[in-house]
Length: 78
Image 1 (cartoon, rainbow, N blue to C red):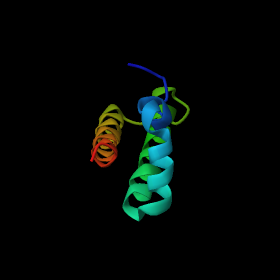
Image 2 (cartoon, rainbow, N blue to C red):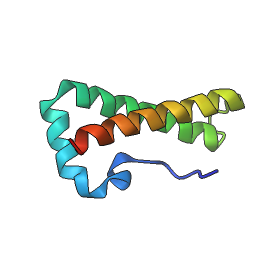
Image 3 (cartoon, helix red, strand yellow):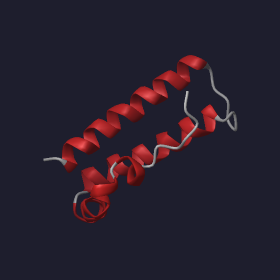
């Protein structure tokens, strides 16, 4: 298990400018981006035991993060 935060700028370094533009021009993308940021922080806090959660909860949070990342990637690659 990795305790490294999965920041979108690190996940998609070639799309940083595109993400910034989409956050400004597309409300749906901005919501996905914010939701990803929130769940990513929650996963990181759980993984590092800053805010421990049950294992099933942590797994579900990771699944949600992956789904959001897939949706964001879909919009970036469209």
